[in-house]
Image (cartoon, rainbow, N blue to C red; front, side, top):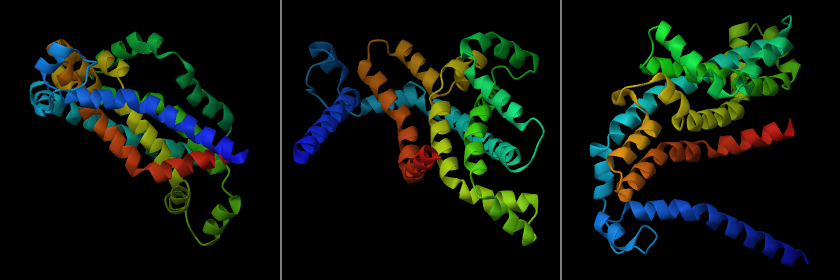
Length: 273
């Protein structure tokens, strides 16, 4: 009976994996087909050609290089700044008796519960009033502002459950608040920071809504809005669009593979807590 259940489980997992991998493999294969092949036989047919020129077209003619640079210029500072501010806020709210700290935490989290659609016009108008509209700084500020509450909430749960004796021992040894934060709390919350870093990198890198809200010119667009422009430029060249999609997915896949171990351990700790 156990062998039957194990076999059924493995079979189900294989089918689910194929169901997930099918569209991904289809996009990768289509990105290596020529335009004439797709035009003659359709996008769903078996490939009869192989070319990598589609990646060159997407990279240079489609502006993927510029879009990827813009995405990295937005994503990396946004992730680092968000996690740094969230870690400091979580440390203060979890380890010190601040009046109304629960209310502060709930107010920070409440911002993430609002539908982003109702905030599009106010955010765009505010960025215009501050002179940041159509700049990467505006997108960085939006990403940090709307992600800070959730990151603080998650890190607060990790830091709150750390034994208080650790902080007391560090205080007895003469460590100040800054040293306790940097040398004790941050190393102990590294799995949570890595998990949040991988998630926030994916969310910010793949964001479309806020990018088209505070940005206007094509030279400032990150990779996700650039894919929309790519569809307009190569409206019938599905192979070039597929190549651009594959290129856009590479950074997030690389980040996840790099932090996979920390990501899994962070989720496991979160589940236990």
